[in-house]
Length: 196
Image (cartoon, rainbow, N blue to C red; front, side, top):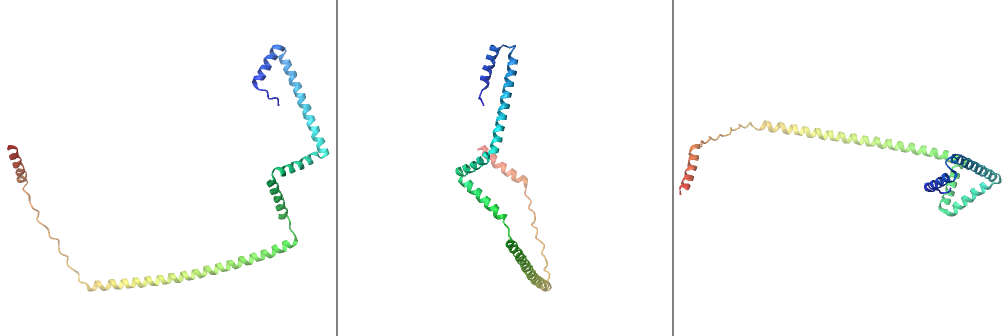
């Protein structure tokens, strides 16, 4: 309200302490508080009296109409959207006897459509199941034919072929290496080279 900071309040307090004195300072603050309280009460009474007078004369209704027209002037898109919303809500609440007759006919049509759709879906599923059974029977028959052909071909070659005798693997004799001679032979040329 008065935009008084802490430094200004401190300056006023110090001046009041010097001018009034420390003895009378609490009494003065109490009187100032009572005066401020009375002023606030009078302002509150005045404001409520003005609001009551405005209600009696219809100024508030005019002010709300003025506010809505100002809103429409400042935000035309928002005002247009409010008008559209009001029109849509009024259309959704509108119902007559012809609408109820049409809605009953529409409900019957919807039920018929749902029944025919369900019937066609059931027929399609039955047809698909029948086709799947036929494919399964065909696969089973072809599998049995291949197994029978495999059994027949496996039985015929086994009877015709004689059992072949296996030859044992030939073993090579292990060659013995003279260990002492090789190491001595390696050492001898080394000594000769050192002597030269």
